[in-house]
Length: 429
Image 1 (cartoon, helix red, strand yellow):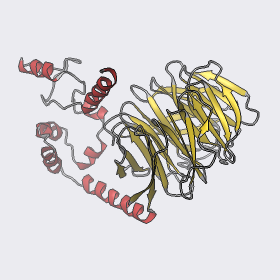
Image 2 (cartoon, helix red, strand yellow; image 1 turned 90 degrees about the vertical axis):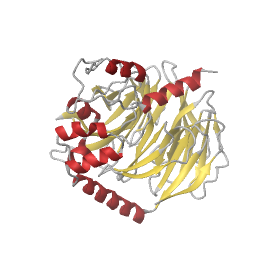
Image 3 (tube, one colour; image 1 turned 180 degrees about the vertical axis):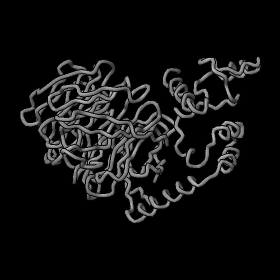
Image 4 (cartoon, helix red, strand yellow; image 1 turned 60 degrees about the vertical axis):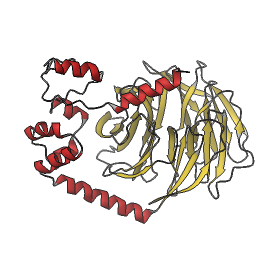
């Protein structure tokens, strides 16, 4: 179904980003360099690595034509490079001097957006290399940026978890909380969901964050009817913060990479998991699809970039199989769900599920919110010993909400445990 065809191990530190043009692959790293490879045989180009930045390079992206490569860094600069010879075309300094975390070209190559740690976002004229417009988000640093396929607006994501939408004049059209604990990446599908009426176009937007989730949004915008952002669904395949997400060029697949060291490829239409790749040995920080072939690049804190190739025929078969499995689950009775809960060592939840008439179809539609609101499962995190002591005193209410607990089942919060362990690894000698 998938094949690892090449591993690049030239960077001396964490790989932060990778990007494709029609003929090249670019990677950038904490080691301050950008490297360029030919897609024909993945050999590094003679003028690679590109060196200018004095601190970590956080992001790199190609112009739509592939003739220009942009890179941005903790040193507060965004640099444009000629991909034919590796020559530097321009150095654009963030007005505030703040570390630049993300950069992205507009679909028509006229503008380049750069977002910084202090929350400022700049639109640069990509021809004159001059500052065109500047704005800032209310709180947090910018970590994500994506232009709509028609170029009429772009979206930024912040460390506070807000998605902010800007038009091509840098006017803020909309802002809302999308992810608890912060957004790490966002991407538009290049294919519209539908053309609609009166020139209205709907686009699919994916965002991911520190809450371990990938969220799908439906976005529409016209100058007459205005802007609308609608939440569609949540993909919860990862068990740790999700650091990267990207659509395939045809919009049929969505990939995500996580702190759990895995890469997940989803079918965009059914939202089923097609592949789970576990080759990396440390956090997966970046992932990107090639624009014209079924190639996927994934980069990691293990200092490597893996190149994966997919077989189209097998991919279609996998999509069909996943859909059949979902249809099979939809046919489960309430007793089938009870049997499944017992097999998952969750027999204490059987009564709650039966009381709420949860069959296979309902099971597939359950979310964290419905578990908390409809099934009255508490959803908060406590110290195990303290909670067991609370329950042992015959207290059957939630310590947070004071609502009656329908069950005394304690579910391990493995995500929180992983976050604590990561903090300890970082701060303890």
